Length: 258
Image 1 (cartoon, one colour):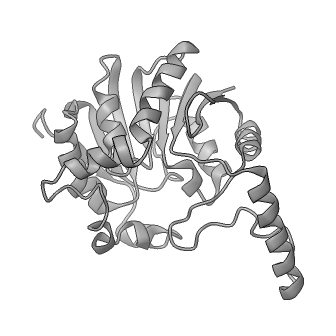
Image 2: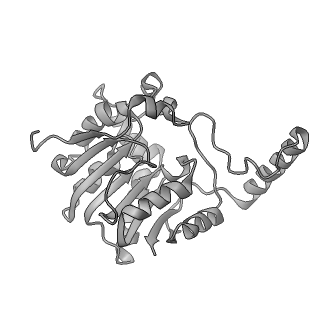
């Protein structure tokens, strides 16, 4: 392997990926062609426009890095980008001098194999630092306490079992390791109450447990909705101290292993 190439590892088979509740959606390349980040056609402007203008993701990325540094949590050493997507955050993190290695975990084969190389070129990634891995965020085959930091961009709310995912991340983080989280959009308490009422009515009609489905996932993408309180409670239960960067809009998070 050339020093200019990135390594790819396959921890799950395509069959195992498709058995995951949202695996087929994230591996539908025909659907992906319609998206702003499908840049293997050479049109990189659409991804840049999406990150900088049509969304706040680039701003969120820069904000959470600055917020963590202000709390004396520096991005350095070995990191992992969980649910890395097309690996734009992996690319940017690899360019930080203090970062020695980046693992990019992703469930979508075409994102990892086809789109990520174009993204690495676009953002001038330090490709020799990057290892791309086809897997889910429940299957992280790395040693205990081997990672300094974890990054999640539009990732956490896709976990159908967030406690299981966080337990796995916590296992591989070194003492005082941390997670940087962007791309989340906590719902208001009013939206939460409306959802509870809707599910209570549904439960009455269908004779089901009324609390079922309060944080029910989108059946296609696996998205979940959480209030700000939900985020604090979930991370606290899983052994993290969560700090919200409220100067960012939407809010970004720093989760510190305790």
